[in-house]
Amino acid sequence: MSTLELDVRTRLGAFGLEAAFAAPATGITCLFGRSGAGKTTLINILAGLLRPSSGRVALGDEVLFDSARGIDVPPERRGFGYVFQEGRLFPHMTVRRNLLYGANRQPAAGRQRRLDHAVDLLAIEPLLERRPRDLSGGEKQRVAIGRALMTAPRLLLMDEPLAALDPGLKAEILPYIERLRDIEGVPIVYVTHTIEEIVRLATTLVLVSDGEVAAVGAVDELMNRLDLRPLTGRYEAGAVIETIVAEQEADGLTALTFAGGTLLVPRIEAEVGTPLRVRVRARDVSLSLTAPPDISILNAFPGEVREVGPVDGALQDIGVDIGVPLWSRVTARSAARLELRPGRRVVALVKAVAIDRHSFGGVRDRPLTGP
Amino acid sequence: MIDPLEAEALALSLRVAAWSVLCSLPVGLATAYLLARFDFWGKTALDGLVHLPLVVPPVVVGYLLLVALGRRGVVGGWLYDSFGVTIAFTWQGAAIAAAVMAFPLMVRAMRLSLEAVDTRLEAAARTLGAGRLRVFATVTLPLMAPGILTGAVLAFARSLGEFGATITFVSNIPGETRTLPLALYTATQLPDGEALAARLAVIAIVLALAALFASEILARAVKRRIGP
Image (cartoon, rainbow over all chains, first blue to last red; front, top):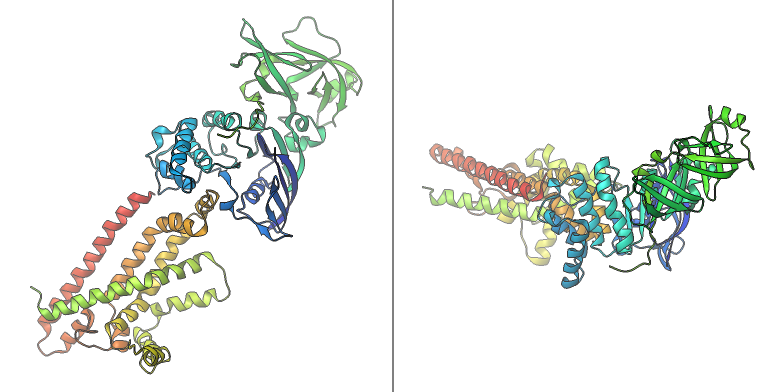
């Protein structure tokens, strides 16, 4: 498994960027941050579309950019596919010619096989003879993904490929991106500013803020860190838990096992044994000193307070260890009344209905296989 | 219907205009590309130079061409001494005069269309493995095709009508440099040339309309091909 390394400095007008990270080139590496944080700049530097003023970019032992050694591999020779936010299909070509554009140097037989495969994977057969102007936003993005795949990329760069789509279309495209990760095994660098996409897609998370990389790591680990809250989002704050589908119960619930026990959630259509990533928002978790006997909440996990966040207005985030880290958002008054401080034994109550379909993501990490 | 004298002027005009456009197309494209895509020292000066024929009297352009390309001119003298080539007072000279006069119109149209080409599409093509040259040939050029077409038609029409620079540079030689406008002018100078002048005027108008019409049809075809 090779590593993607980046250590660059550049300046674009008033915006300065000084970023460094190394991440395994496997699965999906998400660059996450607010708009204007420098995510797109970083991905353009990876693509070779933007030349940093100094630094180094490498994939495995292949150096793509090194200002000290005067190396700057042009974008067309990097072998990276790039799916842009706005698709960027060529308006003067049919979908078929768009798809074949990047495959012109491949032998004809392999090219046809690749085309058939991409068409099949992305379900774009009916679109082949159409022009980009006749496609819907979702169709355009599928074609754009196919076009990038046709170059047989070593690494696929995706810059907020869903940002321009409405929620329904996002749900339509997401499975295709998961297929790239799980079936094609193409390593992907994925820029986004929504937590949902991270929970659903990310293998490795790179937090970008003000032109710097603030942290790199596993999704659950970074999302649980209190010091990164300003970056991972206050309102959406919560824990990410890795679970496995344990049982589909008769009354419409799905049981998920994790290090802290069993989490019951409304039915998820997934086979028993499927690894599943669940985001539990802090505002959906309540704390109690004893297990309440008569309560509608199904999920109660005994644990111990580990961290107490600062008071933010009337609210306070409490980090609880229930076998895995979990966060609860309570009022500062409750925190004081229950004397919540590190070491205090509590029971965390998680409302099952609060965990909706936006809270899940697959975390399959299959060995890499070429298409 | 058309007598030999008129036919001669018509054929010469078409030949001069066609060569004028053909030869200035690559130069025009390069100039438009330079002006649209690069910032360099002296850009304003180049821009001004390109537009000069649009603002100075055509006679001045003809005179400058004569000074430069005449047999005793700076470049013309060298051409004659080294290769025995004469440009002044030939139809090739007329084509050069027409090309210089039409150049600003051509560059303007091309530059506008080039500036409208989305450079992000070119960047996308690079990430798909295409080098600069292939990107230009397969993305930039097709997308600016309407502008190239407009530029060529404008330059063709302007070349057909060229008078002042032509008569100054290559004079008014029947069968060599007497294009339609020059023939028309000559007819008006003859005591009984009214009928001939009128007929030549009609030919000039029909020709211009035909060029416009043809360009309109072509433009539609191009638009259909490349989409909105």
